[in-house]
Image (cartoon, rainbow, N blue to C red; front, side, top):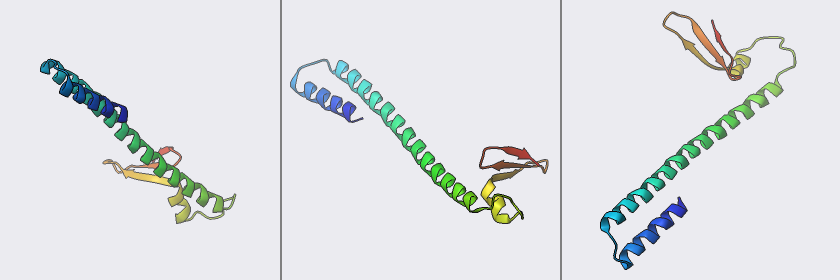
Length: 109
């Protein structure tokens, strides 16, 4: 985006110092603006993806920390263990529940 902004500055300076067709100038301006807007859109999408991955990384770190604190053999099923494993539970119109675990596994109950 910095490179494209530099291109726009050069383009504007050229228009101010050299006589040229204003239709060509406007066309080139639109092309540079589109290129900048496309780069900005891509940058914004990448930033959103980065934020999502950082959040997911923190969730996984907390998940593995909790799992490491659990005994190797589950002697008793606790609410905390259930919450640690479960991501979402969705109740469908027919009353069945879709359990989605943090591992990505889905089970219809």
